[in-house]
Length: 226
Image (cartoon, rainbow, N blue to C red; front, side, top):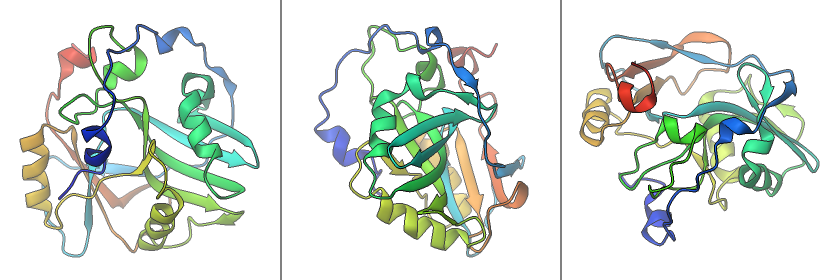
């Protein structure tokens, strides 16, 4: 299955990362965040017929909101990080809808298409990488309509149509339809993990309709977790 970043990366003008520390950009005051849906973690991989499996990204979870020309990126703790990601804010502003609420992960990828948590905070000088990408796994509101009551399959269809022309906003990548095969790919490519989802599920809180499995002790030293 082709990676959604592959075509872009084949022609991407790779350059060394800038030394900017995103941590030096102090977040603005807190703002309200929609009640986010959280996956329940399981200790081992599994397969559930009819479910979908997505790559789990190692980045910062963010809610992106657009109202007319105003865009914000808010962390799950309520801090406004819009200034950290001006290119992503512009990409959301360019989407063809007057009002949008997206749920996703801001991630930066290396040449092997591995998302690097530590690079979101501080971009090293001598590495090559993508710019910050917004890997979106849900669409909560569109044109003033609350989509959280709709099944995931409908939200995903609307999401893919909405961001089809964007280079920096990409739907979360779907893994093989068999959960065990999906986990094999996670391990082979050294992703952080996978998230399994019931395509019929509405969007609501912590749930058993989203289940995640992560690699143990994943890149702990590189990520700054010792």
